[in-house]
Image (tube, rainbow, N blue to C red; front, top):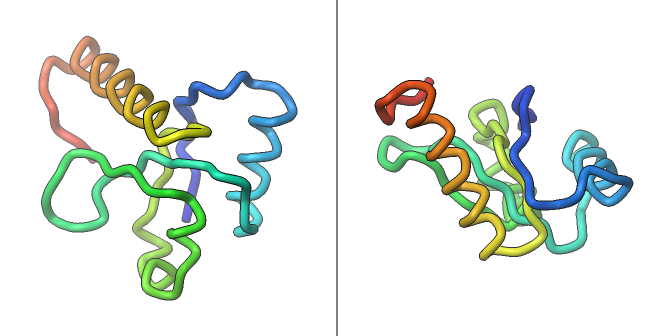
Amino acid sequence: MKLADNIYTDIEKDSKFKKALSAIAKGEYSAPLFVVTYPLFSSGIMEIYEYNELRQNFYRTLDDKIEIIGVSGSKDGARQVLMDILEDHLNEEGVLEWP
């Protein structure tokens, strides 16, 4: 699992944000934290997961495919983060194509 260079978030970029990123980087369990990733399977644009779900054995086999591009403290917040990512991408690229 890797973190994108530019993480979108609705969490204030203070110690709570740093603590969340540190937990992800170390692969530790975290308080409720939702992440936005590129799709792990062939369909979709982006996906939202509760971070601790990605620590389960099934997802550990996909670890090298998981790239976190957004972080939020709630599912609704993660939806807004996803919409912010889409809006920025459309403004920059004009199309919805992903790496």
